[in-house]
Length: 170
Image (spheres, rainbow, N blue to C red):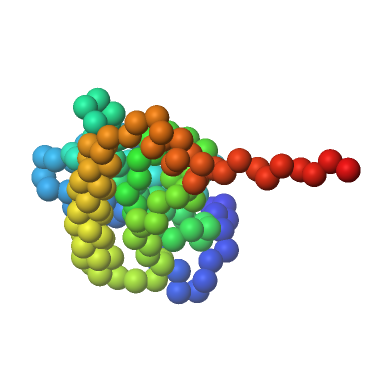
């Protein structure tokens, strides 16, 4: 009987079971790998994290694990959000970083639309995100294959972080 949040009259709550089932259907049967899940406060915000089958490899042994993150709020503080991330979400801080960090690969849904529409669009997003992982893999492999001697690295650093101009002393 407690108030969870104040929301718009058109707000359509997505129950945890519905959200979990929707997220589950994004993956081919037998390929999903849930890594973590949890809730914040008294359940106002929930998340599920699934490990994607494709990692990003840079060089031989430098591996970046990829995940698909589902989060939902029951208090109206955020939309339903499904995104590609490399952040292993285990707590409030890592969830916040994954949601507000540098990634722009996200599918967001307001709590007003029909869940069947959301599922169709989320599947299209997952296909796009998986393609982006493959594209990132190709780009990073290409960069890793390019030789970089000390002189080239110094030129790169000077262009990226130039030395400050000398200060005139009076």
